[in-house]
Image (cartoon, rainbow, N blue to C red; front, side):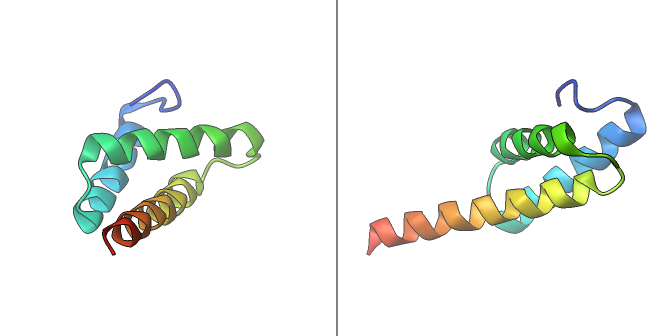
Length: 77
């Protein structure tokens, strides 16, 4: 986890989101963490409120993973 995460409680919340996304998508935690952290950083730059950032970053991460998986399937066909 990077400097975007401040305290242990927040750190655990982010790790939990990352693990759930990784488990649901079948993608390794490390790969999901990289995407999640990049999206979280983007969101933090313009955020006035940080309350929903984990949910928004998780949603964007899942969207990116879906697009990546669809692209991989197209390449197989």
